[in-house]
Amino acid sequence: MKSHMICYVSIYEARNRVFATGIPFSDFIEGIPVKPENLLLMSSYFYNGKLEKNTGFEYVDRPLFEQLSADDIAGYGNFSWVDFENVADLEEVTEVEISEMLYADYRGKALKSPFFDSVRNRYMYLAHDDDWMCTLYMRTVRDYRYVIAQRLQREIMGRRKTIAPIPDEILNVLFDYAARGVVFDFSAAGENLIGIWEVGNYDDFHYDIMHKEFDRLNERHLDKKLNTLEYSPRSKKWKLWNAVPVK
Image (cartoon, rainbow, N blue to C red; front, top):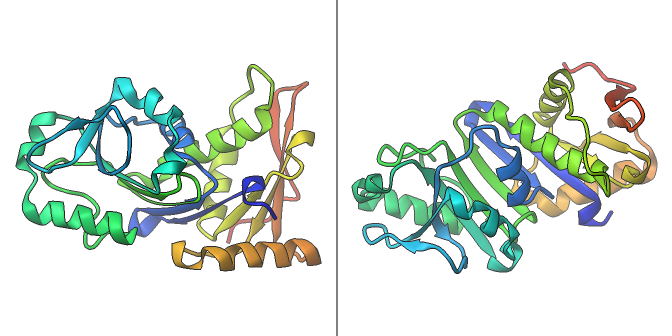
């Protein structure tokens, strides 16, 4: 299955952690309900960032988020950041915290806590080639429901100008599925259908294994297909078919 025809989400709520593929930064920043004020860029090639002397990192404020989203983030390689509210807080970032940020950017995971006292960040975002793979730490992981919704709605929207939002009762089910590791299959998106497959929890070190498992299940028509999400353009309603109860 071609990568652009699926996205994968694995949620570890107890660890405040999400691993995803196929969901770019533009969908994250559009979908997340609590927007960051500023991004401290631990790794990027964005041309319009501002240098912060204490950390040696550049930062981007909210008015530039749209410009950043439209940039070729996939061409950056690593794209890593933590959010912060006040520029003055960056002067309080310690050398130990800077070292931990550099480690997170290099290894794609937090060394200790992903949340820093100095900047009081809500998010640590560690992506490679934009939507190729992303490890994300969030103080409120359930907010990721709306990032999933943004990605699915965008796929179904196509050339439509508007689309009804996925209701919370369905998003809650999708979130619970994602705790088990799911692939959202867009191969029938032109027919307003998205397949949902349970493939298990994988991280960036097992990315290829996840793809092989999905291909195996899909080709053999095994019973790991949890559900199908359908959108009706006529009624502007979403519904799940063949629901499997979340255990």
